[in-house]
Length: 628
Image (cartoon, rainbow, N blue to C red):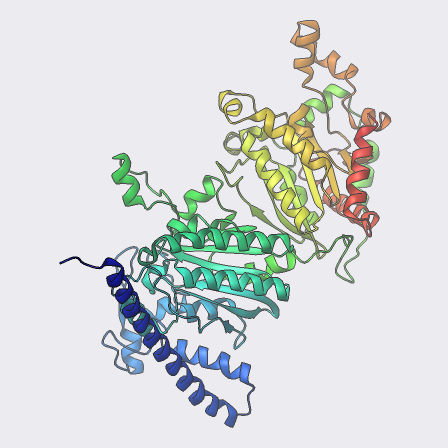
């Protein structure tokens, strides 16, 4: 007897369609009952519908708070039982007091290991009280492959967690600032990404564009949802396209990677943030460590695929601790609120005038002027102040961003966000180090290609969010070596020069020590270029000049005089616009005064740029270099 396969497929589809309809109807009825009961209570208290919705979500989630008021069997605990209730730390394996862990924001007091955090507790960590408004909580259940038992598995996950899906999205306030917040919860099918997860994230970003709000997502996932097959895979492309739309709208997108973030989520919306952070110790990667180990047949190094590993390899901006999490989010919101033409938004009442002390005035008069070779030797001294020594007297505070997002974080260049009397700026700086050990770690301030790519990434981010750029230059030159050439040193420098020339924000470059060749120029294409009084800026080192032209490196002193490498020489050649006094010589006793003077001058520069369009700033920069 022939089997009609088409008929069997049709009956199977009808069967699953009926099951889905029943499940969706049951979920809708359950929501309706909950909303009606909660609405009655809230109406008696005189609250609006939206307030009732928020309170209903918070009350429901409050019952799920990591077992604070329940023991393992779900029974209510007395205060004494709660005080003595012990749980096992998943990191160190020790039994720890649950109340103490909760008070420490779910961090083990024995090993500092981070517990995974449920949605309601994460909301309490970052959102102002009673401000979270959940979105898209009534999306239908999908079983695109008619996978047997999938609907029951979803129903069990909903019953167990009290959540409608693996991700919760909505709107809230952080210290009064509105954001769109998304939180993945590993309890729901390991926070795997299926159609509904992808839809909620995409819809949240579309609504963020409509409301002009920044988006922050706490990522966590085991990867794609196998039961949904190829439809799950398509969510990677869908969410990534939504991130692109958000970026085109000029809105901030930040991701915080929590333990674990792997698979398709890592390879889509989790790694596309303007700023990417991770919690300490979080496992982050595309393929899981077990899969990698089985594939290559090798033991993996200690700390492989941890948050710290990603910082070292330049993949994420940095690590954020829970005790500073909410403040960090607020800092990022405020640092990305600049508008085109508004580059001098200083805090009212903070316009202080620099005053030089009488001691430094006298020292400035008494000091003997240096010749070119003396200046070369002076800027090479380890004890000469580095960029951070000045930055602490210029900016309210500075938060470093790491990595080129591709290979490594180069410590020879530091960069990040800062505020100058309330005005957000992006800071780039070469850093040689303060002692021999640090100098070796920072490669004596000679950047690798990934250092220049990190600087360019941060400068392009500044352009996107209309932040002025302040670049402190202090390098003997780009590192020359096998690894630098393998990774494309020449291309990295060339791309920086091209991209910096067209940046549509104010760019100010200040030479604070050595300025060696194209390696220095790669972060010095500015609207204005300044130099400290004893800084140098040259086509190459005097030793190299003498070796190439005279075949005699010992004539370096002579070369330094005819190369015109000092600030005074370059001011006459119109290569720079301003000379910053050192008040007798840059050292630990004058760093604060030099920084204070630079702060005032930088503020004046930003005031001069106030009101200029991005096109005008780029055109002026082009003309500045066109004249040479």
